Amino acid sequence: MSTPTLAPPGIADTAPDFEEHPAAPASEEDSAPPASEEDSAASAPEADPDSDSETDPESLTASGHTRPGYLRMQVARVLADTPGAEMSVGDVARILGNSGGAIGNALNKLVELEQAVQVGKAPRRWQANAETEKAAGTATIARGTGPATPAPGGTTAPPLPKAAKAAPSRPEPITRPNGQQYHPRALGKHTDVTALRALREAGVPALLYGPPGTGKTSVIEAAFDDLITIAGDGDTTVGDFIGEYTQAEDGTYQFVYGPLVIAMQEGRPLLIDDATLISPKVLAAAYPAMDGRKQIIVKAHKGETITAAPGFYVIAGHNPGVAGAVLTEALSSRFGVQIQVGSDYDLALFLKVEPKAVQIAKNLAERQTKGLAGWAPQLRELKAFQEVYTLLGADIAYANLLGVAPEEDRALVADVIARVLGRKVTALALGKQL
Ligand SMILES: Nc1ncnc2c1ncn2[C@@H]1O[C@H](COP(=O)(O)OP(=O)(O)OP(=O)(O)O)[C@@H](O)[C@H]1O
Ligand SMILES: [Mg+2]
Image (cartoon, rainbow, N blue to C red):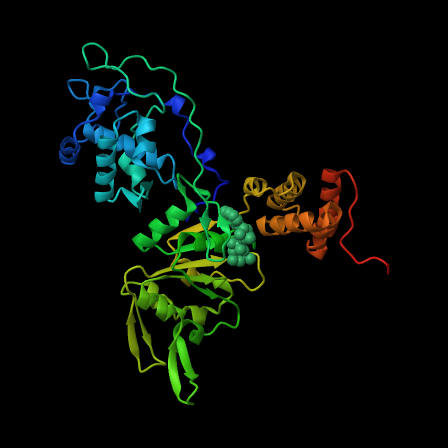
């Protein structure tokens, strides 16, 4: 299976260069059909998705008006090109140069067709979902061109004023339950967070794999605010999933449901973190919940049958490099989507980690991909580096960065640090009595 990778971020990577896609700006009148017109357009034939609004009359009515179906495609294009962004009617109207009424109707229609999601009621905001890109087809937009006058004769548009280059909008950070801010990353044309939410909606289990400290747990927590987590290790038991009899204060024994049962009953997502450290026999207890009927039988509790409520979802984390991690065929085959997660070093810079430390990490990561290094600092180490740097200064921070490297990689790490800093560093150690 080819696996998607969490790309280095920023919407800058995915944001379109709108200058490359000039489209006819429509006049306010042209493209602002009354609400009823846009509504009725739902059943009107759609514009040819291969059409181009500047040159292809398919995007225009005989009188030169933007076809309502095409406007909806353009609105979808705006959302799809800014994945994760929560946009108001005004935001979209400013980009397309159309009237708010028509845009509002188009947004509502997209929601009705499940081709976009409304993420806020007051103020009203909309966001792309997994279907928005499809709904946009090849509709193109000209950003910031504003209303224009149709050419005489009405069917072709006037030459475009050069559109101002759009400043790419970065998706808002999401606050995780621990209070930390998560900055969404790109996953194809989506954000990682919206993609995971769409996978949950569709019931496609996802496995996130990569080295420790790259952001696997963070993205899952950012995506799901109703998450339940099992932290897997070699000692995890079936009881840790399903539940077990526990002695109550009055001395009687009661069956206390485990996280798998609670997630199924309450329709919540279950993160099986470090799933591959769990014994395959134990993991097998969760398989019936993920397969077909989404039911498990709790033998330990009178053979009770638990059926998953809508919203139940299984997602897992896996560190391939960790000793004892075994991704069995049985486990792998249950995860229709497997996403590689690596450190995003641009994000580290964005989070104000010292550029030289990021450079050291990148150098080591490059060597690692060539098989020339066994270790590179990930985002977690870089964040820790920055904390030490702020608290105790540069010397201690770099000495500690060397100190946290595995013993066998120390010489190489020391070499890379020395090259980037222009001076030698030794691992952090206590000095003499003061
Ligand atoms: N996109 C992001 N925005 C902000 N912080 C991030 C992001 N991704 C990761 N981090 C930070 O990086 C650190 C490591 O992330 P996380 O704990 O999710 O890694 P992990 O891959 O789950 O590691 P492990 O395999 O050890 O469980 C955390 O401090 C987290 O807050
Ligand atoms: Mg984790």
